[in-house]
Image 1 (cartoon, rainbow, N blue to C red):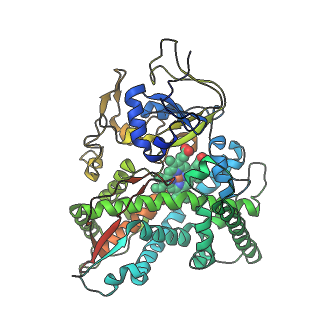
Image 2 (image 1 turned 180 degrees about the horizontal axis):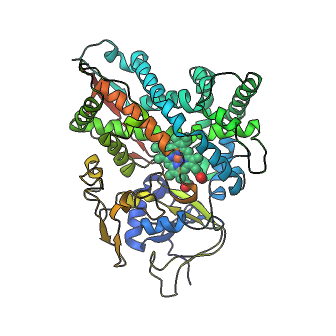
Image 3 (image 1 turned 120 degrees about the vertical axis):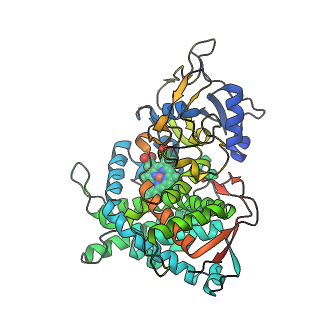
Length: 495
Ligand code: HEM
């Protein structure tokens, strides 16, 4: 047995940190060509073994959780931001119960109640936000513009707080909450991933904001307990107040507070980045913007030309809207690196990386392992015109990925047959924007609801155009964001 090949680097300790940090996709693809699906790189003194392709994802995400540990990979980033006693600050078995509590709060009944709330928030935003002045002037010939990231970030937090986070958060969003959020978010960067604590202002602000944010939620919980008749039945705090651990204990107030912070952080950048990318692509392809509008008219059109409001059920019957989001998540999945730490020596399956002359590869205990579903999501052997944003690939007559090959021969000569698997949720699927396995995202339905409702509401009101090409990826944020310029032009629709 031997260690996986080490990526060549000039600088000890620093290793490949700069290449990986500046352009992880190019780094992974270049290394894949040179070393195959499995290789190790040095990231500031740490060893990170990357496992690419759908088999690589299966290796990392489908491995047993006693061997592949998420807490050790993430807690130095997340605990200072979320707070103690939740998520990666507790044993996995406890977090899995907390995850179940959250899932419970994302019930279909609650989701159903959210669609109208999201629609209301977006309409209110269009009527009041300064970026939509041109829209407010009611002139259908005049073009205005907005910054895709900034506008979508705001709509995301407004809609998430109106629905999941609850009335008290929504009422404070323009006041104290917004600054606390900004400071806390300043602690959620690649630097924080590399160094849990540094003597920097951003770290001090993070810690102060965490404390205040935690107190803010605890205060909400205390008031709700004093006044149990308030009307909060569909939000997450209400749901968490009802839950019990297996040993019969209820969640403590600070645990609820910290779960709420975790959900805020987990959903904010992922959803707003997806929205920003989708708006940019729609603006670059007015034909698809028009088709989306036509889809709305076909389903919601009233005889007088107006459109009726949407419901949760409606969202399942808008295949083009669905495929626009799906396609954005294929080429711009917000999370490009999924990490674990291995707690024991693990053997790399020979089908994933052909054995070296010394035998199979073994990833030694304590090494970090990394899966990047993005690489198979843009693999030209799997997807036709893989770099192109083409929502139509997701809805052919059979409802299967039309332009996704149904099978391909991988580098070891094995025929991989995906069939419907191209959209499967398995740990070996080549499409995993929400991850897979034990740590898979539980926010997917909420995210689709939120993103879908926001896009549909905007597309009903405005046409879009893009003055520049769709921006490239900015890899300097934890979440894949568009670089500048990200200005989108809009004009009010007739109705
Ligand atoms: C986990 C992506 C929205 C809550 C994950 C993972 C990915 C992901 C890739 C797996 C991480 C890993 O295995 O290490 C996304 C994307 C989103 C989104 C692309 C939106 C487009 C949300 C929202 C929420 C949420 C809205 C909450 C309401 C979570 C939670 C986990 C998770 C609780 C579980 C982490 C674990 O078990 O370790 N998400 N997410 N996500 N996500 Fe999301």
